[in-house]
View (cartoon, one colour):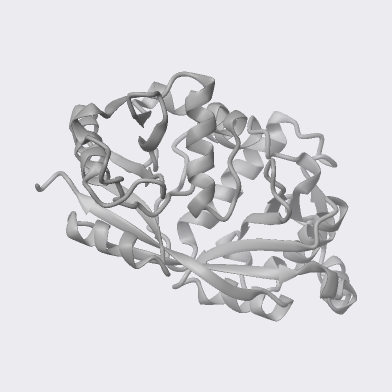
Length: 337
């Protein structure tokens, strides 16, 4: 999970909007329907199970998923709100998707008003959503409701079958000669001590990446362990790390997975400690992550970067990734009206 979806505003003319109820999602059928709607507009697949797993972690922070139900119980759309950056006070993410079986008579607007009502209860200051950059209706919908562009997320895809890993062996050998050891969380025992180092590396690299907000994603180790290490997509042997053997410092990492129901791998995050940048460590750990992807049995790998992260986009371009339609991250300021 963790992605947003561009909103539609479609309602079948024969449907009476007043007969549609917006209620908190609670039944397995609701989660199945929400996952199906997400998958209409989402690159990475969602299942009812993965959605329920993610949602269970959001409820404590006021997160909510709500479904728009027709009189016959059919789910016509949904909205959702959840805590996005735990280190940024009052910052929440939101979802809003309407079924393409209904069209243009206000269901999207009604779901959005319900979303704002929930945001007011949570004292939300900033609300973020993501819109596919090739979806004109979604861009129009968010612009009309006071969202402004925060950043552009560039999405990329690699044909793993054509990727020649031998080209990057000289870089790996050179870094080993410089005193770097390449490992994985599995090799490090996936202990709490190792997870603490991974947490610190993730937080530090993410906060200092080009184009970042300068804010670490997790406010505590406990949040990181819950959001990452306890997730079904977390594979210790697919969390690759580079360790400076002279100091013991964890210098770089790259995480890869295959989400349930997906036919490709996803390179979740690659980061290098700010003190170790410019030494091709990111390229090295990405190479090892792609090697691990082959063990998943997939033929393609996807990833994404903010448009301002030119160094990482350049690395992936060198590796053979090509750009695909991306995402506009939009933000609405609720604190100032």
